Image 1: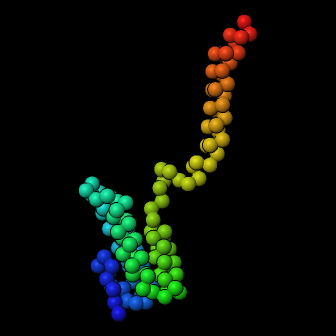
Image 2 (image 1 turned 90 degrees about the horizontal axis):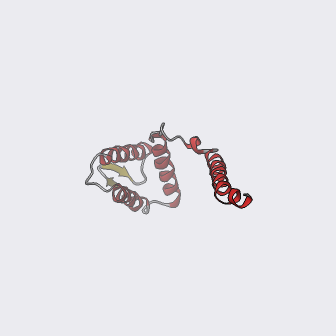
Length: 119
């Protein structure tokens, strides 16, 4: 038995190479969709996920786990790292921003109220 998802033929149960091909194809379709303003990416991605879910719902639980493990692993491996916004760039910024904000508030309160009450 064979199924077709977005032009990719998948056996039941799918081979690892077929799952990787599907993940690569979905990534390419998403990259192309990003540059089309008439496509709403949220709806587009949900439609892709729905087609994958419909296919996986016909698999046994063990086959489904294997399918999603391979599919998700491939998508993660081909994902682009965002050099402009790395994940570790935000660590420590929160406490520093809070400290600066509190210092500014303290100066405002001092010059607005405390100084006028003291004189």
